Length: 365
Image 1 (cartoon, rainbow, N blue to C red):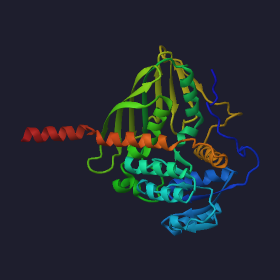
Image 2 (cartoon, one colour):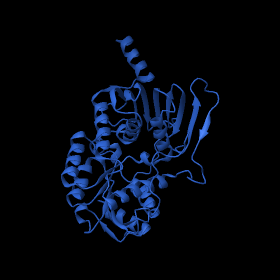
Image 3 (cartoon, rainbow, N blue to C red):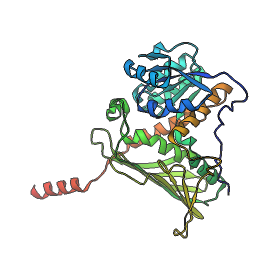
Image 4 (cartoon, rainbow, N blue to C red):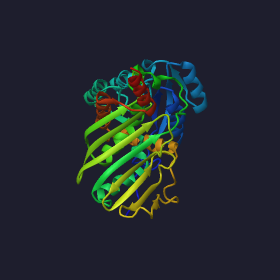
């Protein structure tokens, strides 16, 4: 059984020969730009970040000083000429306008997930990318985690046997160092924890297993943005239907893993601090588990910076070679469709204290 990823990310500098560095902009200087994209770009010698854009020019200028970027602007319309690509990391509501501006100017785009806040906007971005013929890659960054690629290979090779069910837990007490409050604003974000973490979870399930066929959805939004949600779904696997369940939370520390149960073997994949680790065990005997990780001397455990750097290398390679996007606009649209389907099917999560309150009111009435 091979433990190598199904598709190795391109090695640093491996772009089919000596080429000039690609001139990149980062549009949107929030936390993901500060803590992920900009540090990752320093690892990738194929690119150079030459411009930062944010509605807070002061914030863009502060990050420019830290990361050695020479140009700043407060509006995407002020991007310099001659760019080879742009990372777009603005609030979800503005993906259509900002990515659209770049695509119309012929600038390839690496667009942070989700593709858009609504299916309508997502489709408009996809149509524009197809019409202009400009590269559009969606930031489903887990595609570049070695453990996730390892699982895809094993599933394709059938090592687990027919898959019976899959479950996902993703949650922690929220501590992301946000630069703005857009994620708490339904108008700007499009939702809460589902539209934030859901693109990663749904993209992994579709990438590994196949298209969802049906779902049920519960959350605690009650007119605001959800902090807790659950999804029950059915996936079309290679060997038949697969029952799935996902729990996402911004309030609780969950196990942060994906568990896949097959007839022969079962596995668990860590999503956050254990994302380089895959645990495998015979389904009939859960007592003895093997921890399988890539050989550290060959493929060291990835930090988040490493994962984002591999994503950038893949984007740079596609730009330089004219190849397809490693994560396509169609992949992004599929995730947004299922997120919107969840919101349409929303049912309220039940909590013991609310049930008790209703019971009390009923008795008193």
